[in-house]
Length: 151
Image (tube, rainbow, N blue to C red; front, side, top):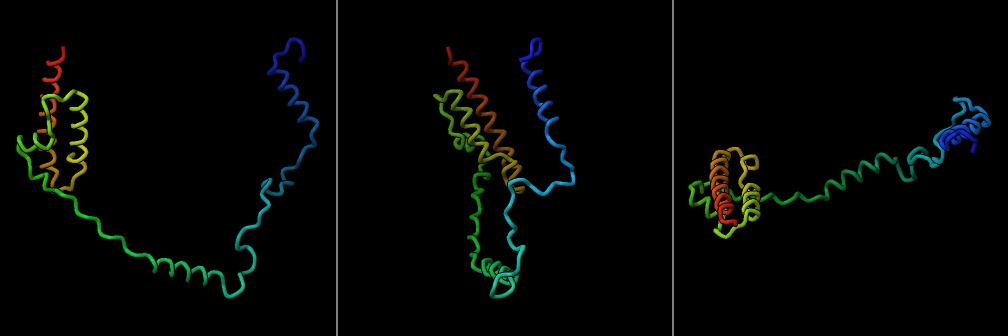
């Protein structure tokens, strides 16, 4: 280390000396990507037994013919959206007097996962909105009661 210079300055000086000692390479002398010596597939002549593209095309369409159509997805059960009265929603939410605030929040999330208007078909959005409104009111009331029970 040179006296009066930091380690960083010493490293920079050494790099500068090493670069000065290297012969200057012309930009036109570039020969390709270093370490990439493999040839490209298909760059040579077509394989024996016919044209490669014809065999590839035949194999492509033969693969598609073997596929079986997936079974139709079952229609989701939308009968829950006909249950929009306060009592019906209360039974669907399944609130208990002994529920803790954490349990009530969990019930709110699981109810919203199944009934949120953004997750329902257009024809059931109004009913889903009504159900979510009622469920949120019921859970908010239960949370207030749970908070008043705490010492």
